[in-house]
Image (cartoon, rainbow, N blue to C red):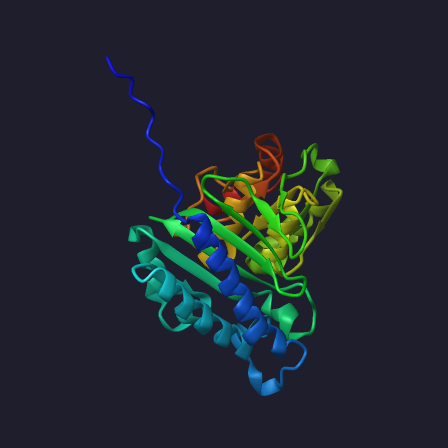
Length: 291
């Protein structure tokens, strides 16, 4: 009798394709993003939903370049760019049924970028029927990138330096935790109650940039990231990278994250399941208010 070995599902992105994706993002940053940093005129900065939600010429140009590159590498993939969705919102609805989809945030932290702060990045994710299978968080200023796929560890890749495998923090009691909360992304009637939880933690702040917040979590420098106003281009890559660095991620109601999660959902990523549960309990009033 022949033993049947368990079937393994190959990674959605091969090592060669991963290298091509990293190079594509680097080229876009050098060509379209960095030359415009701290050199934008007022006519190159527009508002989308308001003064806190900006888009620049760098966002639009970088997304076009990245999308062209992705089409060349993966001609059958669905491409979902943040700026393209602004005029084609139905693209997000196609993610759940796509065998391979890419989401692009060409300049995450646009408010920071437009005001000359270096806390901005490029986020790229790949999903398989809505489940993240590849994530990339790129820092254009330092030219380093954190990547992970659905089969290997989260890694920090730096020019001319050894690649480093990443691990999240050890977590702990609420009073010992540091984390990120985008208070301004919550509904106005929830902000005071959320802010009232801050003294329970060691420190709570916000970088206004999901790319750098998830990078910090994956490197073990903070213990949790809480997000509202979910979008696949902001969160899918960070979810997978946190998981591959050993962290625990779920929507606040405990359900699994998917790239097509409702925008009204809340996302919590933490160092481990126990820490996740403690932070979830602290923010549990948000779930009560949803019922």
